[in-house]
Picture 1 (tube, rainbow, N blue to C red):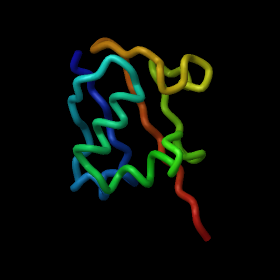
Picture 2 (cartoon, helix red, strand yellow):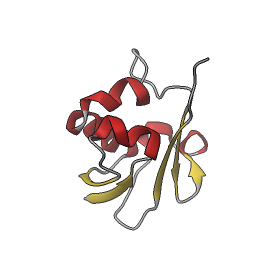
Picture 3 (cartoon, rainbow, N blue to C red):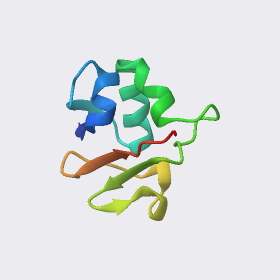
Picture 4 (cartoon, rainbow, N blue to C red):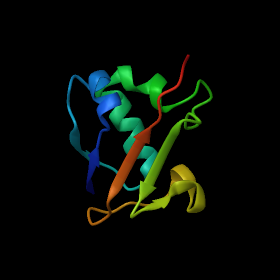
Length: 91
């Protein structure tokens, strides 16, 4: 199933300036991994070395944090609104 994913501006530079993509996925984790395959520079910004979401990345499905749903196993459909927020860090 094709889902629509908006890429935040601070990750857009890592995705060749692309701000929105259509990805075939049935779970949010699958969608994010496919995003990272399509734009490899986004992987370190989204996932830790252990494959978990980085602590500064928040993902919402229909305005609910996936941490309160099924995390990366949260199912998604074409009707869902998916929001990815990547906070800035550093000093």
